[in-house]
Structure formats: structure tokens, C-alpha cells
Image (cartoon, rainbow, N blue to C red; front, side):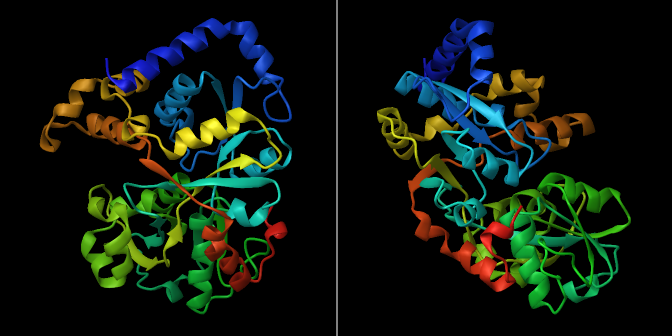
Length: 356
């Protein structure tokens, strides 16, 4: 039995023994976890179509098995809600946007930075459709732009800076209303879909993990050497339909952190943090057949060549790929590693406390 299978089996045993009464008790916990064997983990899906608790299952199974704890996933609707949960002491750990480190430094401690296959940085993109007639960011004056969550670093804050540097009046957004364009906020996945499906939306601002696969590689080659050299998303450029046209690429952004409640003083915290930082690669990997089963997908499509897949199977394969954990390691980090986000807020003229 592999380590991944062992952790999964152990987790199923723990959850089964907890029973309905135990889970009902967990739902009433406040102030983080009252029981040191139950760890509350606040999570915010970056993409609406992803079941983030299922996505994080390998890491949770590993931590539960190694530390003898149970992890309770607490899903929030957006980045602001995640911040509020941690401010209210309702979470022990959280996966957050880099912006949370600037927003509530007194309430959270940075445990580590999530690494995407060795990369410590990622990017924000602004894209449009090939037939939009829009060729550069300045062409977006008077148009409607779909963004990620209002406080998303890659889905809103860096794109706002990109638009401002292009000469558009952002009106202090997201705290205010843009003067030169209309902003609609949602999440990365929804913003991309709105661009594709809604003719009123002229462009989308998202993390590269959302729109990058829709942009041909040669467009990145022309626009951003940093993206080509650093981004793990570059190798998947142009791999998904429909094709999108690239308008702008941000400067590199520090990868999102794992944080802990700063006033949480318990030996299990130190043990779990050490386990995260020293976790083997298997702790971040799903068993393919188990994941396919959880998603209700025929595992046989995983072995098919691309030209053998039906349209429905292509959609199923994309869903499968989207539920893989996007990072394969957690590196020690501190608040100082997120200084670029603090600098970003200053450039936009925003105070961290102004971000709802």
C-alpha cells in the first residue's frame, strides 16, 4: 500500500468513527478548534467550479494520519470572508490570498508559501476575445471588465495597477468605482466565463492559472519574458479552447501562503506546521482512480489520447485536472516575503483596512 493510499484509508476511518454526532458538534465550534484533535482549516475556492475540500484531500489525509488529528474544512465564499473568519478566531489554519498578509498581519502568522512545482511566483493576466477589436489595455476605456474577487491580488489588485499604468482612471478601485471602465467582481473562473459567454464583457482579469491555458504561447513570448521564464502555467499555454487574446501580464506575484491563527498556542500547531514544511511530494498528489470516482468520472478517459476524447469526455478531463492540488510543496516564509503586495496597495493608494 502506498503512503497516499494509507493516508486516505486512515482518514476514512477517522471520519467514519467521528459519526454524525461528532460532526454536528464540530459545526458549533468557535474560536478555532476547542478540541486539539480537531483542526479548523478555512478555505476559499479560487475557482467556482472546484470543490476545494476535495482538491485539498491528499494534504489533509497526510496531516491527519501523521499527527492523529481531524481537519475540518470551512469553505468561504470569497477572500474577504476568509479574512473575517481568521480575524474572528474561527480558523486554526487557512489558505489565503497574498493580500491577507497585508490586511491582517496581527491576526495571522505566515506558515509557508505554496510552491507550484518549484515556482515561488505567479502572474495576473488581462485577456479579451480574438474578435473583440481590442488590441491593447487603453482600448478598454468605456468598456466592461470582469474581475476576480474585489480583494483578490491576481484577480483584481494587480490588474487595477496594470490598467492604471496604461493611463486608465481606476477611481481608487476596488475601494471606489473606476471612472474609465465598469468593473464586475466575481471569481477567476466566473470572470473568464463571462468574457467568453457575455458579449457585454470586453475583457477579463484573472490569475494565469485560469486564463493562461486559453492563450497561445507565442503571445506570452512577445509580451512577457518573465512569464516565459517563471510561470508554471506557460507549458500549458494554448492547450484549452476557446482561444483568448492577451492584453497584459503583471509583474511576478509571490505565491499564496498558508497561515495560522496568531493567538493559537498549542503543541499540535508546531507539529502540523513542521509536517507541512517537510511533506513529501506524495502528500500533494491524488490517487487518479479515487479522484475520478469522487468526481463521477470514468477513469478510462485518463488513458485516452486527446483525439479519442468526445466533447463530454474533454470536459470531464478538464474537471479532473482542475481538481488536482495546484501546489506540490510548502516552503518556509514570513510576512516579509509578501512586501510586494504591501507595495502594490501603496501604489494603488489603498490602505489594507480599506479592503472589504
